[in-house]
Image (cartoon, rainbow, N blue to C red; front, side):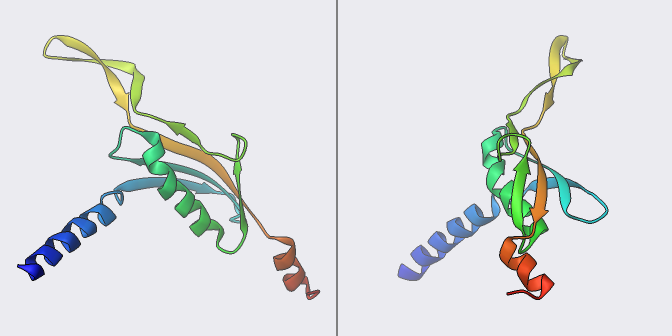
Length: 123
């Protein structure tokens, strides 16, 4: 009985770990690889649910460099699912095209002063 209880707890824990993994990223970079345009979208209708994945991706892109986010005072732009401009008719009822929730921002990867000092040979 005890082992089946532990199994159920582990099963539900593993489901919650993978539930937010369905995030799709679109990334564009400059030639030097220091500036990125990052968009995240997923199965959710709530943009804030994508923020952790977006920040994780931004940190992965910059590695040891400092992450600076533009254009929204250091925060990415968060949009919930909403109606787009396009309309469609389903079963005689006019409906708007749904635009899924997204998180968008410009990510700049900047070397910190300590990192710059090490690269230049002046610790």
